[in-house]
Image (cartoon, rainbow, N blue to C red; front, side):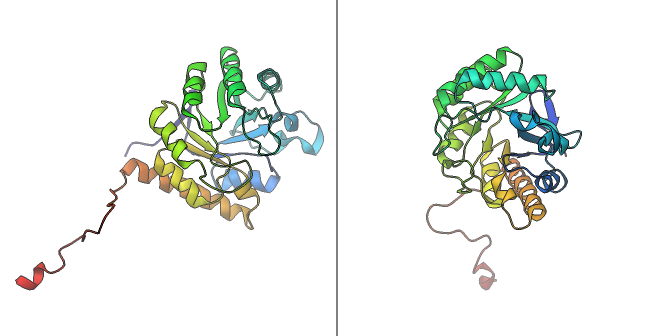
Length: 256
């Protein structure tokens, strides 16, 4: 059987789970790597630019790909400045663009995100923009040079699940880039569902960080994502809108 490889920015990954590290701690990172098999972990640049125990880089194992984010940026200019700082700190060329001027709902500014994506792509970054799922914006991000598109499922940290399900499906169907569902996924079953829809990967943080048993929840997310991916690749069975259909004859044997 051909191995299912997740390609992102010219690199190969076996895992399709990405850890968002907004609520990071040692136990969360350890569980994500050991139990969820995460190979990509985001980090806020401000946490990589601090000394002592607060530096998240002290806790991320070797071999894990860093995905610095531009958390705190309110404009494209601020996002570019943060991304360049992350590169100077040795975090590599991957960057997750997060631009939010809305402090209440923490919704991304799609227009500024497109500007920052184009700017950073020209600077040689592998850009993963976080965005509100809108088809026209996604197309603009493709043209701007994005390596993937990261639509939110629900507001950050809400654990509300697939509030934008129909719009995410449109992006999966229409955009020829990996669709990584980010923010709002609260349960392994929801992660499984987006993978069944055809998403390339899932990013989660709060759902695992706030679980009663972090390692067990990390493992549950890994298994759910793997199951959803296998179901998608296998081809889901059809759905009958009306009535039912017996899987085998119900009365034919009585005539023999």
